[in-house]
Image (cartoon, rainbow, N blue to C red; front, side):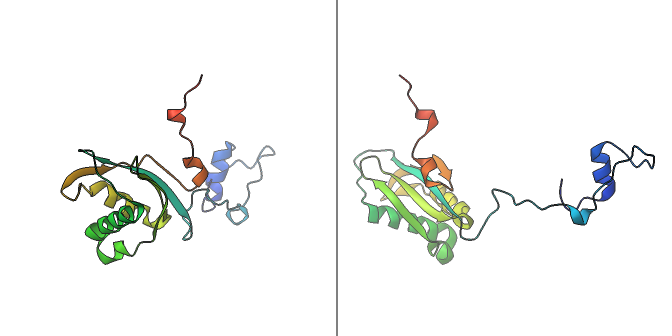
Length: 152
């Protein structure tokens, strides 16, 4: 029930109708309705974390963390121009063996980053792909994956 609902809608939702008899219920006015915040409302300072592995068609490619971030920034610049390259992206963790990383970006820039990573198809003339495995506003949520859980 939203605060813009009218009194008739509130009454109809209660199932009482608009009867004026003694069984009629008192319907609160729309001004008395309480506003509740949405738990996933976008806030300007809210951050999202992405877990992304980099996959190459041919093996033997080595990237350190600085080259990995430069690759991400160039992907943003190619797709979104200078505005995309100015998007603040942090590499929180990076594993050179698996070429996977956890990235942090503001929630307003999540779609730009995700699209730039998805559309990047090559690095140094080698075919490659980013796959976004998980995304979450909470870093702790990326620490475990229930789909990879092995029970003994």
